[in-house]
Length: 491
RNA sequence: GGCCCCAUCGUCUAGUGGUUCAGGACGCAUGGUUCUCAACCAUGUAACACCGGUUCAAAUCCGGUUGGGGCCGCCA
Figure 1: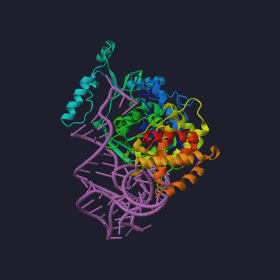
Figure 2: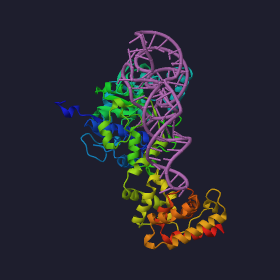
Figure 3: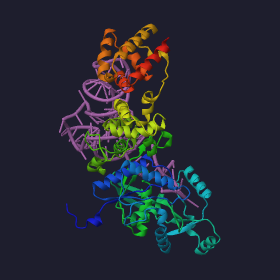
Figure 4: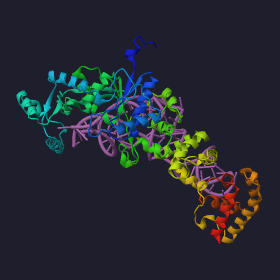
């Protein structure tokens, strides 16, 4: 379909995190959906930092948000670090805009100073709730005469700027939920700024979305009650109304909004735990959305092609870590050995298993036999530590397969030592070991009698990769050494 | 308490009035597979919250009940 005025109709969406903490998984998913919607429709995706709360905002959180969004591959077309037509993209740098519209609202008599104390307001709310009334602000400061207001202001009395809410039914359409209706009679006058230079959320959002020409506001369902408030402010300022789409919430296992008490909520936590960005993206996309087919594996690129708001769910979605693990295992298995070895290095270094200059070829061999056993990178050190340690520790009982006696274990170990020492260094590889040892193991009736003690002696673990591949990587010398050590234990 | 949103297997979901005694995936269980674990394969497990109505026909439409969730800040 052709469009005569593409620029004017261009879709523009935004993610507007406040730098008061690490990038939350919920924020990341909202960012993802906005990004997908923008890219699918050839629109623009804007990153705006909502740092009006000076107390809680910190540049370090802003950095965390930007770093992790980038890590996920979610790129913005305009933002604090990307020049754009509608900047600046940090609210703390947009103060003059807010002041401008605040003055306009004052001039038009649509806002007023409120001198109520927070304690007073809190008590009022409690009282209203207790008698079953809507907990809204009474609006009593509306009536303070102008002269009195000036006097109190001159005295330096603390105040807040409130927007006068006039009662009526407010209807708006939500792209996911359909037609919604709120009774604004139930909304008290909205605090929109502390003063001319300190805007508050509901007001700053409206001004910024207007000035940044945002066409679609896609955000979490927890913002639903804010929407009528923001529309009221928009109308007072004569701004056009964007389209709204409220996403279902991400829930914890108890079906309440995902929060810290459910476990990790920061994208950085998952990143450090060794989840891949592909995993997180694929997983987040399916929290409240699906393509309507049975396909479940999607890259960011393929999501862009398939995404649509119509397929977004209405009900909240529980964050299921088991599924995340499964997906991560899948993506780990998709990685090339080279790449997987590379990204494993930091985890092995952290566990002090390798130093600055690891033997990459050796590492790749190890990784290749553990790739299919890995769910997340942070598990790697515990799985492969025995390759790097000089001496491993385990209880003698570990060497025992089923009901073997110490005597039998010793026989197996002796046999192993005898057989293995005969193998030439150049033939000490998986295929050969298998050929030689399997014959002997078969002779014993139960292969476990030979193979289990071998694997246990080499790895020191209940479970591990197979003994032949481990032996090849360890090398003849070390293998014989570990068998000797096992024999010492049995004595 | 007030307002609002929501409701298919334990979880994520397919399903938009008949082709579905409801399909897929994760999980779980069982079996297969060179000792173990993993991976893989196969099989199984398990759901339309309830009550009315509309209709020849309802998981699908309407109403109510119940249940769950969100919000009610001079945070965002």
